[in-house]
Length: 222
Image (cartoon, rainbow, N blue to C red; front, side, top):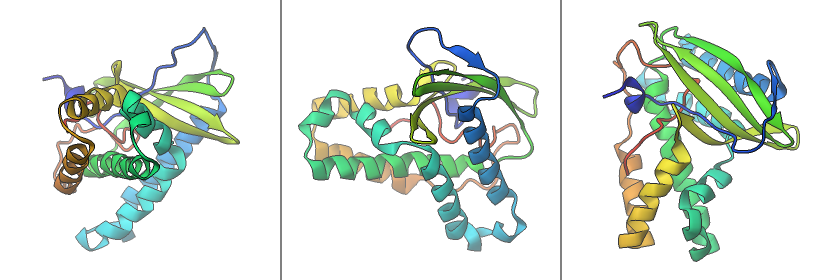
């Protein structure tokens, strides 16, 4: 099994034109700021220990929520099924989807142990951008990561992620589509809640786990 399959990584690919490369543009700067905030929380001695789990998670949730466009990600994950849902169901799915991604992230982020994060640059075209990152594991392996981002006002928000070409949104869309194609929305909600409940911090993760710059895995099975 390739290492990327079990690692929590965010990536994005921009599927339009030939944008100009900006080595240190605003999208990269904002993504770097988010990563630095998360690492500061993880490495804060005052936030260590199981008694600080809830406070630590709450702080990281706030930082992640500032950088991710959960509504866009949830809508993309539902694909054509989005229009079949009521407003209440859309809100419910978005909340569950974001919680699942965040909890998946939290099970891995605390395994950070000094891996290098290399910001390779970004590509911007209008209000769309791609930030390319490389994670250098302690074993010296480079894992390419890209973040697809959308500008909303002054903020650049992540709306899709992939690792080595595998899109997080596309992965969830195929699973959600399979569930809704053979069962019901209620079954999907039950599966999401079960998956969320199964997520717990992993205190003794392998030392080659990638760092907090890679919040969620490219593949995760519902």
